[in-house]
Image (tube, rainbow, N blue to C red; front, top):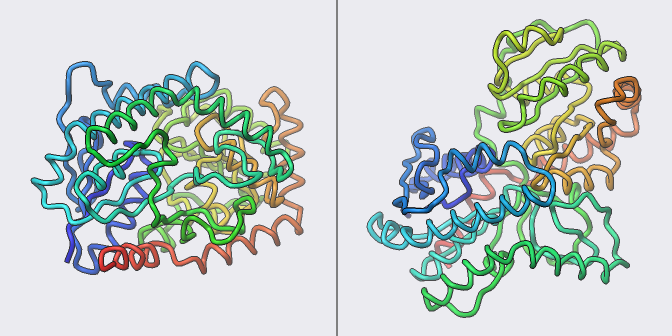
Length: 407
């Protein structure tokens, strides 16, 4: 059996998807372990966690996570890219010795963290890439993941110009990749897309993604979830007599009281009951002021979504996939990262809408009423749910990893 290193960004959604794959591999006798940046989460179930050493001048992971709570705009985009480059640099500086000492037989690396590919190549280890978020693999007519642009197969000039802008924004990260590729002696590499590798797994499925030419550069396996996340759990609230709307802004963005108040008002106007999961970003006193059916830090997402009529979210990949796996239409308020890309795909397949301005609760109420009553949208969401159900999930991903180990 193999010792398999997991290398990913220190964000909860990415760690959760890797954890689900890790437990599937553990059940087959393998020994997965995380290799993370210094200061990243220290305990992830029973999968061991190791950290690379910190160095003078490295950004603290806690600061990076706090900064990530306020994405959006050019300045914060540049800040996020600079932080990502520094975290990659730290992993490459300390990761090689760690992987050798830990006896790694293979590496599974997140698409958004090129250190996984670089370290695997440096040690001549099998490598599998994992797209937890919107895949960054380029394709004709497919805009960059952080844009909410539509699919435009005839707009190649526009996409080329945007690619040049992205390259300029990513200059620091590209420099780190090129420097470590040279230091490791693994050939000229100069961008994130150079570090994807030939074997890739993605949570995204064609029924949600923009059209891509065959063959796909990744195997679409759908959401990577632990078995207990797929099992119905008791709800900590009584089901309302009115349609249930579930709202979550993920683990980073749940502290916006103005947002929750606007949604609460809109749901009341629409005759719906609002349940929110704020990720621990509100105090009990703050949550009590919202006048909603139920508010909690965390809830069993799928259990709530199966009983909901609509999901309102920031558009994070895991939440979008879980909502659609439950056949739920979406209202999305993207803030940053790949959230605009998820919104663009939801619009493309007519699975939901962009949330109206918080200054217009009446418009939000109308969206809620319309989507709850829209049987055609619900049917399209159910079709995507069937595709996600049949994609294979963590078990299929584990099959791909084992095939890569034996190649």
